[in-house]
Image (tube, rainbow, N blue to C red; front, side):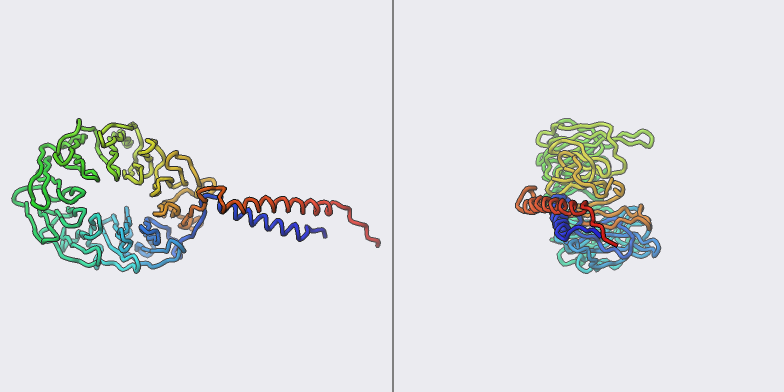
Length: 483
């Protein structure tokens, strides 16, 4: 029987190995690990810790009438811990957030009722004895203080103050009988049900006998001022420390401060307009802007104004992007689909989840998704895109057949987590949760790739030379054997 020589087979193996190694460095994205899932439930929501070390996710286990919460190592895909909420399967929405120091995981469920819990990230231990009684958890910007707002029949509207460093309850705020409440960015002040609490001094200022509607408000980024609504259609700005009234306006309600604290946005009562006031003098800046919603970029350099129009079941929006240094309109677009998506700002992009994104650097509309911290890539349910040009860089699945993914980008911008949409799972075709890794060097012809490239060329010539000799041998007539 004629066979290829051992030399040919050796060169073929070397060529395949060298080509595979070269492909690993030239292929921009590849699997890093898969999350080990013995339950095969899929994921309904998930989040990545700020240090990129942990992944936490929820799964709806309808068979056992529970929601399963699990955490994995992002490096190995190994499960770290799991816990469950029993009897909480009617979920419309659930979401996770990590604290800035990676120590705590905040989990919120919206379903037949409201439910919140705070987990210790290392062990999965829940801090609240009865999470079904906690409607919301609100946090200061520095995570030093949390507000756990009750929504149970025995204690409706009670607010617990928690220490975010130690994870222990500090006190209860009395006379808070509504679910309304806000905490200042520095964690010192709380406004709820007509009362302004100073958590450092223990002082309380009760406005119940003065104003009818002072339930909550918007704190300035530096925590020195509170914009609130003392009466319907009226705005009042208080100094938090002295409770001095800094500003009042009739026929307008406060909407938000800009992140840098330079601007206060107000909405004239029952009109689709926004009024821009410049601080500290609360001086109106230019004419009112027609819009229903306003969103600032994190650096306050840009503002996006949204104006919705509805015709039957069809809802469209007009968007206008302004440069806030002089409130010059730099981009506008009409008749955009918005669906039920939320508007957010993320790493240089205004995002309408599930529909479109606006790059504030290029003023270019692109696909919706998550934007990497380095602003280079955008990830949606189908693949990875160049965040500036919108060019697709990578498919998550061949021919885009299984593009039913949720996705999240790691803080290093080089890893991506994708997971199947839980409602579309089937026993026959389930896609695992995968961590993808960016592998290409910054310089494609760098010192890492170059040896594999030239070795592939060398082994290819050697393989063809050896194959040519074997081919001549195979074509040579076989000598007849005398019988």
